[in-house]
Image 1 (spheres, one colour):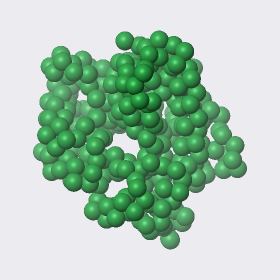
Image 2 (cartoon, one colour):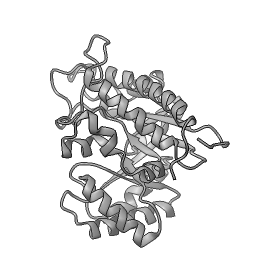
Image 3 (cartoon, rainbow, N blue to C red):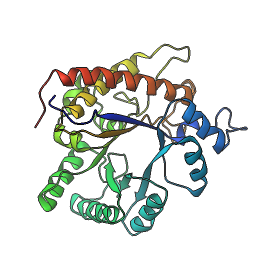
Image 4 (tube, rainbow, N blue to C red):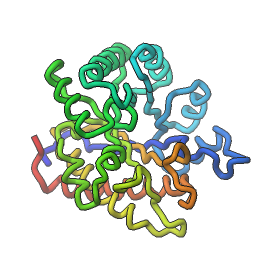
Length: 290
């Protein structure tokens, strides 16, 4: 990889969703405890919609914030983005539209969101997510094509490959071949959500609850190494890549027999860092992808 600029840096952000109802639903951790544990686990920041009560804890622990905006039709986009800007975010992850939003309407909504974000000094990325305009690989490709045609720019994407994989029931042998088929869009991104998945589940456990990595996670982390390698092979300078190991406890993502989510999230961070190291070594031996 031809890169004489600053070394690419991985910024790892935790989600408070990973800590919901812990250590027990009847006695959940306070916000102060959650923020302290995030810092102690080695995370660089949080990936959340900003709330004013976050501010003193972020400042106390030196944590960054990656913002989030959710809008069905764009009417609330500007005020939501202003909240993220006031909270100190640079990057904002945007979930836009609905599962049946047509590509033309999706592009209008995305362009509106990105213009509003730039006016506030923010960089907005559109997440690949269920029940949004980018729900399937096919819709994402068409939206990216239209966006490039209308703006001359690549679509800024927050890649959450778990949704795309489950939508198509992809098997582990096909993860990299089918999910990394748009390397320029991947390299253009500055945000990934790295939730372990398999062909049938948008979230699989990292460990067996006794410290051993699950076979499903081992399949997943091999894909992540390929994903990081593709990103690192992009044109220099690479700068920062913001990654959230987004494991959650609610809305059907977690299965009741899985081990506790927060310890798995902490272990996932460790494994993502190891995959990043392996990917950097691989990328240094291979040419850039134009």
